[in-house]
Image 1 (cartoon, rainbow, N blue to C red):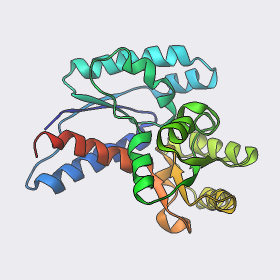
Image 2: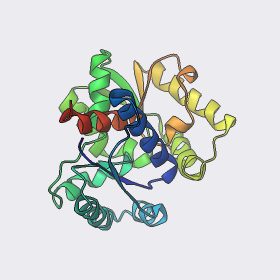
Image 3: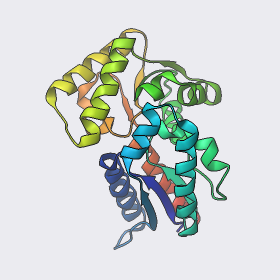
Length: 233
């Protein structure tokens, strides 16, 4: 079994499901008392958020690359960034480590292709929805058509993520607002919705949408468990 390196804490609320999902999947595959081999480095998200909000992506990349090197030195065989937004600096991290990075977009995109979804809606932080690093990978490498909400809805989604979900607050009023944003994306042709922030799965449930929801946290974590077990099985 490979050792999984988790670079999390962005926020810790969504890092917890990673740990649970990975270990449950390993237990299901191997049975008995088996659990995953994991190295976890949890950052102080306050520091990362300051980099984000002040557009200091070079410093963010350097900080996370240093953390990733620590994960590798601790014995991880591959790296997981337990966050969508900070894949903005994934190339900088990959350039400074010698273990592979399992990119969060890839298992999500493959799941969409298997479901024969070609046009998708993307929810996430405003960085994920508006910058090219995420939707560009979906479009160029997986040939998916990606829609994001209108500007006011993007701001709503971003605000709920940072002021509520990253703090462990899950409110019914915000769930209803997110349902409306999902309906907005469906009205412009989305066949499925990417929950492109690892915290959104804490709020939106399958029954909250009439089209499929693809939870990046779950898909990324399941991919990690499978990758870790490939050599063993």
